[in-house]
Amino acid sequence: MPMKKVLIIEDSPMVRENIAEFLEFKGYDILVATNGKDGFELARRNMPHIIVCDVKMPKTDGFEVLDLLKRDGTTCQIPFVFLSALSQKDDLERGLKSAADAYLIKPVSMEALIQTIEDLTA
Image (cartoon, rainbow, N blue to C red; front, top):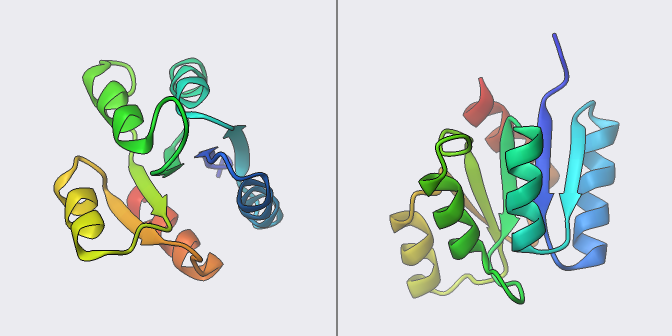
């Protein structure tokens, strides 16, 4: 079975590197972007199996990235997971009402992240 390609869009170097290293260790092919604009372009060029994206980022936030992806015919079907430190009720509701497939709260357990990736890419 070919490796699943995961695009991580995260502006925090520590979080981005931790997730990328863990998923690589588990056998995933990893793409990383440090901001939403670059993440959108990477998604269009590389067509990952799933996208894991931070919500709160400078320039283009996660909701804007999701909107761009869903409006683009080439990327609209890619499963999308929000990964956010925003855990207030309003944040969760906004995330769940969006077109995202899942909303995980930081710090996320790596097991929960892998389970979500597997569930959404099965």
